[in-house]
Amino acid sequence: MSASTKTYPAKSSTGRAQTEPALVRWLLIAIALVFLALFLLLPLAAVFSQAFEKGLAVYLDALKEPDTLSSIRLTLITAAVTVPLNLFFGVTAAWAIAKFSFPGKNLLITLIDLPFSVSPVISGLIYVLIFGLQGWIGPWLQDHDIRIVFAVPGIILATIFVTFPFVARELIPLMEAQGKEEEEAALVLGATGLQTFFRVTLPNIKWGIIYGVILCNARAMGEFGAVSVVSGHIRGMTNTVPLHVEILYNEYNYTAAFAVASLLAFLALITLAIKTVAEWKVRQQLESE
Amino acid sequence: MKLFKRHNNVLPGFGPTLGFTVFYLSLIVLIPLSALVFRTAGLTWSEFISTVTAPRVLASYKVTFGAAMIAAMINSIFGVLVAWVLVRYRFPSRGIVDALVDLPFALPTAVAGITLATIYSPNGWVGRYLEPLGIKIAFTPLGIVLAMTFIGLPFVVRTVQPVIEEIETELEEAAVCLGANRWQTLQRVIFPMLLPSILTGFALSFARAVGEYGSIIFIAGNMPMVSEITPLLIITKLEQFDYQGATAIACVMLLASFSMLLLINLLQRWSRRYAE
Image 1: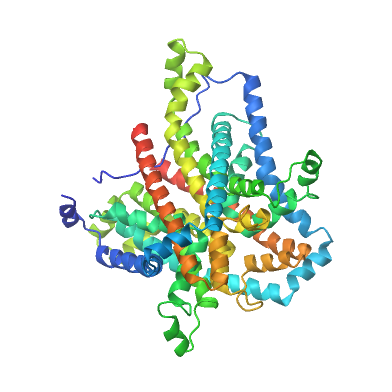
Image 2 (image 1 turned 135 degrees about the vertical axis):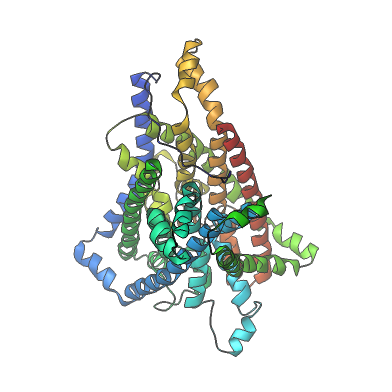
């Protein structure tokens, strides 16, 4: 029906008819593993080793600092606002783009992806240009005593910008691949639009949503460049966890910096684990159809 | 043609969902980005040119784009190798290694930055062995290349990997039947099929490296004219309340990103045509 259906690649059965000599094979595996160990595993190990260098007590003390706790609170608030908004947007955009055809669709997809190709520093700068004192509506905001940049709303806006495409770009190809026959059947049988979405579409895209949300959340909690531009670095007020890591590091308080950083590294590991499961589930679901 | 299809569609909600999509996209992305363009348009042409071609700014382009180019080349070579090993060979812990490749996507850039700076500083885990050899990585342009390689690595692996998965083994068998040895098969059959995806991965990794900030500033040393990247220069200008300067340089960077986005789209179209 729709010619533009993008299919997920099927997992190939690796044929063994032709391959390299065993010696070459093991050599290539060794080079790849050494490279990855040096570039990925070593930094990961270093974060935890530095964090626990002076023992568990020092580690826990660093995390119990009031400034650390307030940075964790701000990061959680930011993610709690950003992720639901971008999730709602992602599902709506995917519904419109995957289930209907209309002119300008490809342009719309490109525009949704745009925030990924903009430098994080520029993602912060654009909000300063609008809401900052020298910005478009900055003077008006000051007259009414509303603070957006160098305050929490600016941090949230910049975070929404950098995590904008995550859910949408995962759901669009997935929903296109699934087609719309199941939804059509539900509607013909008398279901309302919302019933169709919640009982037919949602179960089908569940793992795609989890995948998009987990990546969106990881970036929202870990964003540094964009947030750094709009935050104003007010300790205990507008510091997110990554910004707090920077401050501690620049104060030569390395153990505390790595203790706080280890929280983010731990989050990254959980993200990778959930992402791997979600990827596998999505693949399995598409193959079973 | 396309417009007519909609009349046959029984699914509801096209108007509201498309409306909200365009509204939210404009509010969060398009209007703020246009602010940058309008702000730049407020400068005179000669002001703009003198700002974006000042010696310190030119030096920062050279550092940023040069280091990103080297990092993308390193990533292309090792990325293809990693993708090949992950798809074609079986070895213990393969699943974990495969998942770990995405670590640079998941690990916040500030964490990557302070960690790399610590490992490669003269008394760090790796730095202490390089120091006697006279190799300094942290606080030199080499550190910038290192950080950019770290954050760009998954792009090449994840673009090339699905293409290797899709290669039909019949093609390799045919090459062997026609008398090719393994090296000739790799060089003349496999490599041409992978080339579009390698170039796409290269461009993606390059584009990401050019805009990167968090993982670089800790390891770069940030010396003007030597190891100062363009995104940092934008922030420096902002902190000096030189909004015009920051905006002009940001506009140049944005233009560079958009050209790369266009190039990547063309490359992807090319690689898809190759696949079908």
